[in-house]
Image (tube, rainbow, N blue to C red; front, side, top):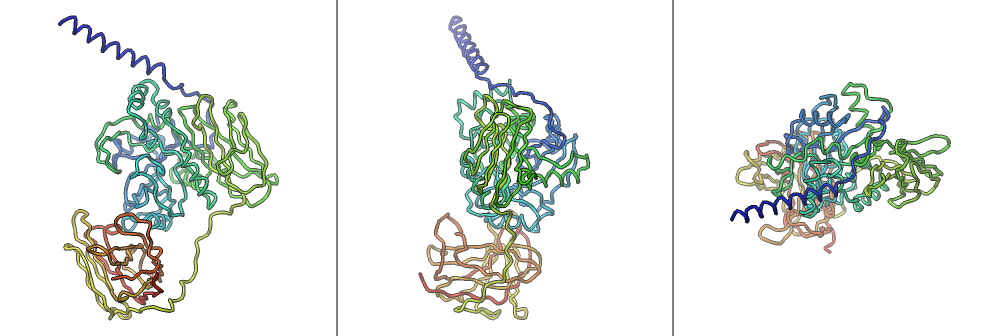
Length: 559
């Protein structure tokens, strides 16, 4: 028996030695050390979760890790609904801490940057509504992990209007790897942690193509997201995940893997409010580039467009005309720089690249460090001949439909609600006042709805009304068509506040309630029209009042 145990021990030792040998032989190259960055470039990490949602560390823990990783700023993006006011900018451990929020919408996660206040109601529901609310609150909407291997985290929305996109998400890069490679990576993490994480990166061609296409329509900045939780969860549950799992890899390791650099007009001052404005303004204007620190660090990039003796920075939108692009990595002459137009290579050079053109398009730069197939640096674009950010359209509402049913406060109105909620209706001059209370307690699909059947099964194509509410809120305008035990429903959320506003909706704007479908009602025979307050945008236990007047149901020809 002894010889057997000895043989078994030797076999295990041999396997461990072989595994260790394999890990050491396949270690990724150590990150190259380069000269310091210009003082006008701030190095930071974007998309970080703390113990306030599903991360493992406190904000102070994270700031300390960022300090050890030589970062100037961090952007925290804990999961939420934006009803918590953003923390004011503050320096902790010499690192500027900026507060944002990651919001779950029907079409994917949206990071809200630069919000100027807390929301009066929970943000959620259709992605277009979340983006609209973020813009109303002075913020920018960023599409998070748009092509994650996990379907529930993937960007599925067709909504326009995003301001930014995560072209890289470090937390998504490991999710499609085989178990054997992940186990080997865990072993390499003990020796070269940041380099081992970056070794899993594969060029996100689809996401880069999304970004290039979006930037042709309007200025859209790109960010590299660390999506740091300092915790690996194997439960398979959707985010935000419960606070359990392996606290690994740590924040510092991830911060040393990827960084987002903000190009400033002047060095940081140490005054939190002033520096926060400078960094956030640079990000929003596209004066920022992404760097994989695990290849070479720090990463310095110069990228401008020259016209008539004037140089324009990253993020600029220029009119039609000849332009000369100049890009360089001044501290890395061996890097290969590629100037891309609409995602396709246009010119290449070592350490620098120059190209003259007059073609409209989206131009950005990728730099590759020797020995690394994944981009080392990715710039934000300079747009030529495509126009700037379109101004919001302000136009009078369309004229009332020629064929319609008008429903006054004395019309056929009823109330529907779940068992725990209440709703009452009362005539208030020319308007109908709907008073609601959603049932208290945990989320349990509480709702209260004002309902009319005035269409009388006639073909409906538009819904028009004047609405206001005692405080800012969202109301779900729905139609119910025949089919199933409770019919099929379609909805469109609208914003209301104390100012009366005319709402005019075409049925084609409504999204399905329930199972996803590509079908959209253009003209439909409806059983009822509903104005619904539910827990998508209203907290349980909330009481409120909404006024509806001049309700018109536009009739069309059946399809």
